[in-house]
Length: 377
Image 1 (cartoon, rainbow, N blue to C red):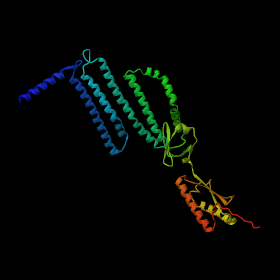
Image 2 (tube, rainbow, N blue to C red):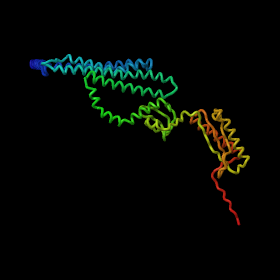
Image 3 (cartoon, helix red, strand yellow):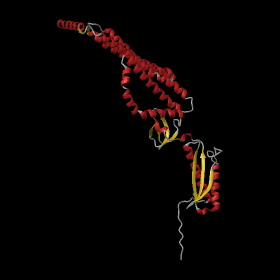
């Protein structure tokens, strides 16, 4: 037992001498250990606070659904964690000695400014995240309108606000807290800024193109459009580009500057879909069967409600041409509502009925043929 007791006493003596020994300008080791412990506690406490705020927001979401309270709590959870760390970092300064025989007072000043900068970052981060609350109210307003294009304006506003907040916060922290000479930096970057502006001219053109799209509204989200060789519904309109999903399933990204300088065919806004077709019958049909064929097609079209929904655009059927190999009957009609698959279903009904009644009347469809007459001497 004596050796063990003596070893413990020796260890205690060593620890006491080591801890009380001033190794860095008037500060004992325990002070630096306390700084490390404070930082670790601040980080852990911030995580704990963040966890409880998110858990409370999740309980509210399960009871009442997503609302402005849950969005607010989720937005401030992480910034509060950063703010707790900033507070812990500021308290660490109290554990150290600063002065002529200790750590330089300049370091103390930088320590304070760093803590203030971290606190400012927490505040800016909170404002940055609280843009989600503004987005929530904007989405509620845009959901009451008929157009869907303003729904796409909400993400653009959100991105704009966040970029603005980030720039203002960075300038505020650098110039107001860290005392960086922002004016000199901006002036020295003047030539570089001109070069960047020239390099980013396409980006600027696309930005103003997006403004043109939002003001003129040549199309809405989900509208079926044709821009140059691209044909499909619009999925998204952003700052730089517009995304179109082609009928083959491909996602095409078109710069907004190209859209503003191109012809945009908005197929989705058509009030009806028109079909024109040439129905050819054989020359053997003669006058009576040709007249009968025209009347049959007129009667069939007159019985389709989707074709007769537009009073000022009745269906048109005419015996129009003497072709090389056939007699041509011109047929034209308009289908309303302008739903593409409904249009195809109406066409199918009309086609089957024409085939059925032509077969019953003995009217034959024509196909390319040639008749050769041989003259005998």
